[in-house]
Length: 176
Length: 176
DNA sequence: ACTCCATGGTTCGGTGATTGAACTTAGGGG
DNA sequence: CCCCTAAGTTCAATCACCGAACCATGGAGT
Image 1 (cartoon, each protein chain N blue to C red):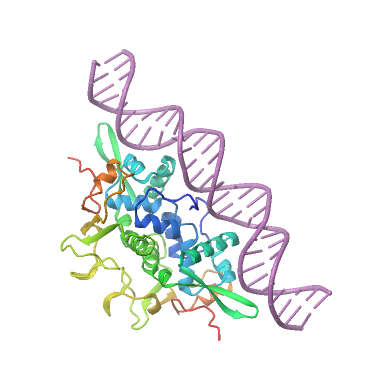
Image 2: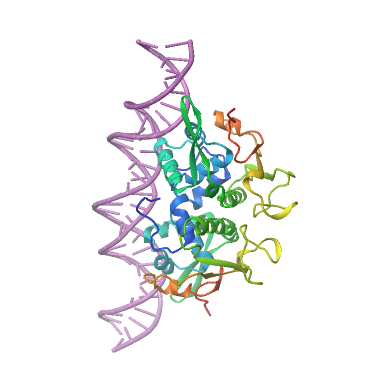
């Protein structure tokens, strides 16, 4: 999208959001963060994103406060990138866009199902739980699972880990 | 974003959505369509978008079925681009991203307020009406208005037309 | 008939972002 | 000492985007 080259004339909240998360790859990185994919190498493997672009996006998002870089082991020192509260508040946008893509651009229907973890009910169009009512289900309480088998040609570690049911925001490998 | 160069490996609804609406400017064009800005020249004036890019986006979105090109006068022949049902279903995504940008990236708070036209209540985070309940308010029933005076340096015709309260999806100039 | 104007584009050279591949750095492990 | 992994950086080639200028069509004014 742009560094220096922004949607400057627009006094508009959407334009500002897009300056930050509207660049190529950025929302896919954020989606993977919701899926619990938080490490550089896992992101490269799962997204097939050029490493230089990933570095740039992680830096930008960290500087903006959407992601936080966090040490998860000391020896050797390794960091992961986790969503901040600001980042987690992108869930409705990510969900809405995913749903739209699943309904209108996926010949076989949506690739994943999202449910309210407490009651197992599929989320409604707005991201709420039809059974439990009262508005948006926070991403921590959302479960997701693939609706069809993982594609043959994507057999990396990360895709395999995501081939079963999971909870959003739970890191792929729980570190003990 | 890419023509030919897509997020090919991703068996993912979000990736497919972004291939189409994730390119630079695209979501701003769609937002303007929700605002009722539907003509080439109005879009150029309001967004300050390069004309070649606008042509490309309008073509792509029309071919994908998000916009429909419609004749609104015969002499001289003039067309406008209006949202299809598929396009209108992007409202939750546009609203969610706008809201996020308004809350986290706009120092003076959101630039516009969105209300349920029937009852005047501000929409909730999910795009529903807290008073009337039952889920998402369809864009036809959403009213919007600026929350602060239009910026001095944006005094084009379109910005002036959008400086008062309006309904989503109502064309800027009703043709009689 | 001739000129001017508005709308809705297209063309084009220059600039900046993205890409894939190769290289680097830092820390273990055998 | 050599090899391995994670996490980057560098670089040349390509692609998309930019702004400015140009073009086409169909009135309207004189």
